[in-house]
Amino acid sequence: MDQAILEFQNVTGKGKKYQISGVSFSLMPGYIYAIAGENGAGKTTLMRCVLEERARFDGRILFEGEDMKGRHAGAMNGIGFVSEDQAFFEDRSGIQNASLLGILYDSMNMKQFSELMGRFGLNVHKTYKKMSRGEKMKFQLAFAIAHDSRLLLLDEATAGMDPVFRRELFDLLRELLVDESRCVLMTSHNHGEIERQTDYVAVMRKGQLSEFRESMDGIGAGF
Amino acid sequence: MHLEDRRQQELLEKFYQEETTYFPNHVLWQFFSIFFIILSVIPNVIPLRESEGGFVMTTYGYAIFAFGISFRLWRYGSYMETGNVRRSILHLLKYAPVERRQLALFRLRKIWKLCLVYTVVIIAARCGICQLTHQGMMVWDVAGPVLFSFVMPLLLVFEL
Image (cartoon, rainbow over all chains, first blue to last red; front, side, top):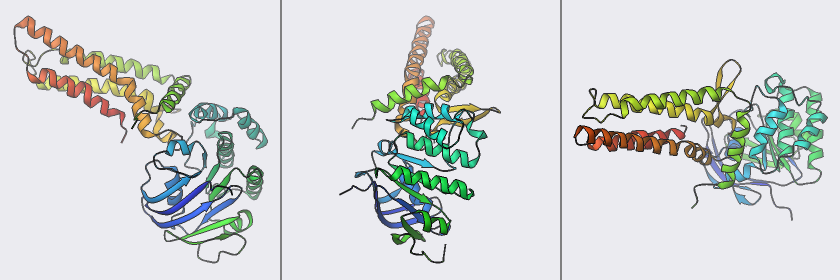
């Protein structure tokens, strides 16, 4: 039986403004999961519990079966984050960023990075600040895949993007998941996109997990 | 419990070696660091009894030394972008597989020997001057450098 890549066990935390309470669910390899909910429901707070070393919460978050508390840096080797919040050297090119920041990862495959950038139609020598939002998302995805991420966290990565970009992104994610060694967890306000493109949805309401089920069932009004 | 993660320390060493290639401001920061550290020796080397300004002068000296150490730490805590914008490395590495404790330890390793040598030099100089002038040393002639030239500058590695 496959081991869950990420598992939330009764996670109760406090974000800057919002609170999450008693969240429990698991992410299995080979699937795309979405966290849905209205603004302030706790979607990003939950993601930050995974990403931030100093996140304050009760309960446990297990990455590949091991508690992230106490081994956060080790876990981050296998987690890729795609978001507008992700920081890179603005004045450096894509390949310079990848080669410099890739030093900090256990396995950074620069050849794979260059291939992915080529596949996305991106110039590796273009400086980060000159990239459009869509290009930055693709660059971040290429970087995340190249350092062997088993969990890809996408925080509103498709917000404001055109349908072509969205389709390309999800086609790529599906390709990456074929070998069933990874999973994707994304947040999105796009109801239709969640229904069509993801496998499972965790619906958050006022900091609590109100539903966790397969997509395409109709999540209903309210977010 | 081991405080130091050798692997992360090695990776950070390699990261900063590569990072130097891209940011020439580091040379300027090192220059200012050396300048202020040397400048701070002047008020600090004189024993309190001999110093006309006493505690005030040495306070300036410690402050200038801390300023010099800050410039040295900028090399490991900041980088420059176009438009003379200084950004935090901590923000850049927020989602990287690097613990904040290891980053602080890495920065500590870069300055603790300098702080120690400086402290020893200051205490030795004050001792020597006291011997020459046949004056006794005050407690703060030793405690001051230990506290303000060694302990307190090391606290600068922890970015709040």
